Length: 236
Image (tube, rainbow, N blue to C red; front, side, top):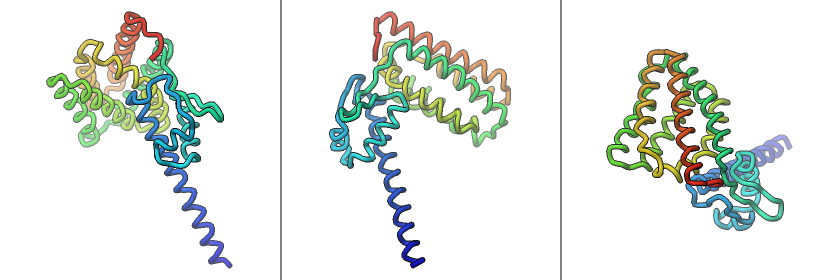
């Protein structure tokens, strides 16, 4: 009996792990469709339609959509499916206020850890890739390298909760940043800021690291919000 009970418990655990994996996969796929603007703001689909597109059952899709609603990317209406939420200039202002504060804290935490050259390699590589992309006028690759830099910075802060919170808001800003990337000045200042930040972190200069990144995020937020206002874009 004990052996049979153990087998039953083991099967239940496997089923639970499989269900969580399917939900995570559905969440990742739908999130990427939204961030890549393949599902633009206002896009609507029923739960069954999403499940069919992903080739999954409705249960993991339903759970994934609820997670995406918590992330602020969709709204879910029972029995009607989901709608991709737009992002307004006021949303972006609030998001950049949060990013300016919390990412600057991440920069300070990273500097305080007195990181090794090995630990700094990810930031160095991302910065170098940003430079190369700008030389080739490849803004898509620049944006990919920039995203890697910010994620690596959050990782090096050593604070997992901080990383989780900030990445959620970076996701919410991503669509607007990508839609407006080629409308803004060439981001040479951002690449320069990143290089200076790496040097401050390397030197263990907590105050300088925080100041550099705080000004970086403030300027980026101002440039983006000014652009949205000039273009009269109220929702993206």
